[in-house]
Image (cartoon, rainbow, N blue to C red; front, side, top):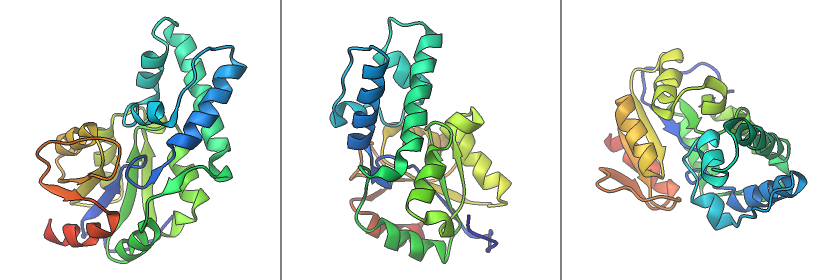
Length: 215
């Protein structure tokens, strides 16, 4: 991960799915394989996966398998998470245009973080798969911390000594989490969700540096 820098600057915290990349086709392929192995009839498209983005794995399990026990739901979602992390580097996930260039430019001026409602090691797997260790200072996942997104935003900022933050995400849940964490929100309109009344919006991640200077 990125080394020491001026932490008096605003920390930029990113959501992952729908904000930095679209991995729904990869996830649908992996998840359907697990469902088949587990004798489950459910099959998903990329659009089905996209509709669940922003939820925790526990919430997704409850939505997909309401007739199964919570323990069985947790078992299936754990298998899905393990397979996603193991196969992260096989391809299928698509970075949004401009992501590497924007991360490189922003990391020269600001500490960068990822906070996602994903399973343990998913965010770290993403960072490693694309060689982004040089850009990100820290990350947190609900599957690792056991906390919600707002708490995790506050956590990564606090443990890195960052006084001010901004959260970049693509869903209404991301917006609520940012506001609950007490930080401004930048709505990535190119992602998976819809947010009413967002003060800051981008249609391309390459617009983000200009927005950050205004916050």
